[in-house]
Length: 212
Image (cartoon, rainbow, N blue to C red; front, side, top):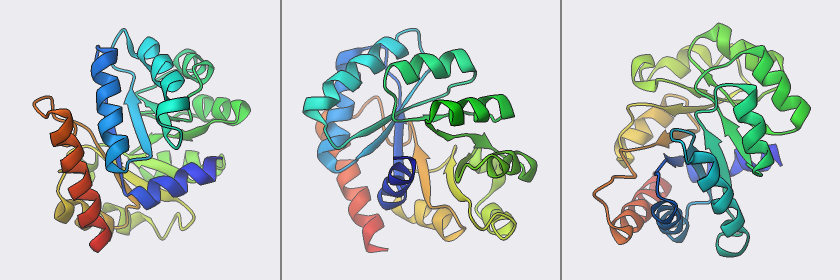
């Protein structure tokens, strides 16, 4: 399952990520993303209602979004990890990495995509059998960072998040630098967008990225 989700991320090239206190708004956003062709979404653990909303979204996905892999981001400790594993998260994304979190994800048989910045942090993931990491914050690393380190970790896949524009040209430049995908938060899921505007934006972006 983990390899299938990683492949879906690579095929999709972008991973939308967001949080909203309102379940109804969260549901509408996921619906717009799904209708636009998105099959991997990161809901972020950035509010008191994150767990409750996530549970409802997973229940809804069974009938409304059957092909969706819904993961949780901004998980920082084992307690949070366990809560979202119980809520049937398909994968977990963290802003940080430590061996305790990594080993716990292996024990629980859940795909973990940890946030890494340095080669030493990437090596923790690599030595524990993980094959995808999130480089965060990407805008501090720069577009050539992955090229500089990828030869040391030839089996590792890199998803970049932080400071990336929801623009096909910008995303392509990051991918030309060695990323296999990028995470897009408020640059893509804008509060001022209507459901239809979000759907149209994502459809356009996916089309443009598939032309490159």
